[in-house]
Amino acid sequence: MGEQVERVDEQDRVLAVVDRGEAIRNRWLHRIATTVCRDPAGRILVHRRPEGVSRFPGRYNWLIGGAVDVGESYEAAATRELAEELGIRAAARFVLKFRCQGAISPYWLGLHEATIDRAITPDPREIAWHAWLTADELREAVRGEAFVPDAREAYARYRALTGP
Image (cartoon, rainbow, N blue to C red):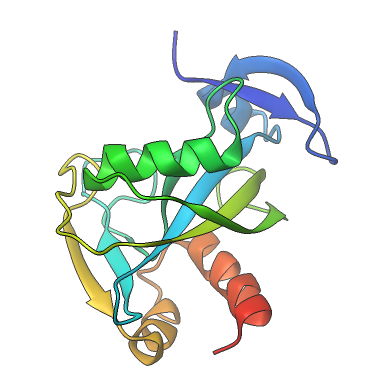
């Protein structure tokens, strides 16, 4: 049995517990939690996914995250993903939630922010490379085709809410 997620409706209400692969194949809405990581200078963490992963191999992203577990809140999932992918404990603060069309399947995306004031230890199964970019550098990088398409949509919504 694969990763279990909550299938949700257009209002983000739980319908059933399903396998994440099945949710993706059937284009069922489910939940994803992500975090924008900033250092004390305000730079934003960008990373490249490993070549061997099933979703968006070798692509760049400015969000850390993954599926929300069954019974888990977006905030708890965002905090858990920071620990799993970066090896740190940090408070993830909710910023926005939207229904993302998704390049491979639609989902509800909960976007959070966290300030990272210590060294990170990226999980090599999730992150092949990383760097801290200024807002201007990120704005330019996100335009590139090498970025995860869903990350571009999240970036546009985040910028519309938070400004340049």
